[in-house]
Image (cartoon, rainbow, N blue to C red):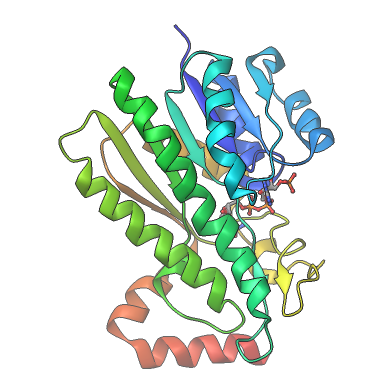
Length: 260
Ligand SMILES: NC(=O)c1ccc[n+]([C@@H]2O[C@H](COP(=O)([O-])OP(=O)(O)OC[C@H]3O[C@@H](n4cnc5c(N)ncnc54)[C@H](OP(=O)(O)O)[C@@H]3O)[C@@H](O)[C@H]2O)c1
C-alpha cells in the first residue's frame, strides 16, 4: 500500500521539491499552502501528478488547524508522515522591527507546527504508527543580525521537537528534525521586514545555496533512518563548529560578511 505524506509549505522552494521527491517515489502526497495556482504548478512538475492532493490552508490561522488536521487525515484515512515545512523569513533589526511582525513569524514558524503536532499526535498514537518531520534551520544555532525573531523561532522549535523526541522514546511515533543551511529558494522575497512588508529581493546566501531538489533527496533518504537530527549544509555549515569553539573569530567573519 502507498504511504501517505502530508507536506506543508508545498507551493515553492523546499516544500515543492519534497512534493516532487515523495510523489515520484510512489507516495500519496497531500500538499498544503495558501496558493492553489502555485500548488497546481508544482503538481504539474511531478511525474505522477495523480498521486498529489491539494489541501489549501493558511497555517497562521491557529484556531483552524485542529479541523485542518482532521480533514487532511480523512483524505486517505490516515497519514504516515507529516513534514512541517511551511515557514517565513525575516530581515530587520531588533530595535526597529514591530512586535506584531515578530509575532507573525512565531505564529507560522513555531506555533503552527506545535498546534499541528498536538492535533495529529493522538491520531497517530491511535493507529500505532507515524512520523513527524520538522524543518528547522542552522540559524537556530546562533544569533545574527536582522534575523533575531526568525532564528529564535527556529531555536524554540528545535528544542521543543527534541523534547518531544524524548517523550516519544518508547512510542512507535517517530520525530525528526532537519536543519538546512542556505537553500536556493525565494524565502527572502517573502521575508518580513521591520514593518511587515515583504523584502522582495534575494540574498547572496540563498542564491549560492543548495538546490532544493538536492535537499529534498537528502531529507527523503534521512526519513528512512532512525536518526533524529539531520543537518544539511554547504560550506556555511562550518558556522556551527566555529560558533561553538571559536566564537570571537566566528562573529569577526560574520561582521565582515555584513560589511560588504
Ligand atoms: N531557504 C533557506 O535557505 C532555508 C534554510 C533553512 C531553513 N529553511 C526553512 O525551510 C522551510 C521552507 O522554506 P523555503 O526556503 O522553501 O521558503 P519558500 O520558498 O518561501 O516557501 C515557503 C512555503 O511556506 C508557505 N507558507 C508561507 N506562509 C504560509 C501560511 N501562512 N500558511 C500556509 N503556508 C504558508 C508558502 O506557500 P504560500 O505562500 O502559497 O502559502 C511556501 O510554500 C521554512 O521553514 C524555512 O524556514 C529555509
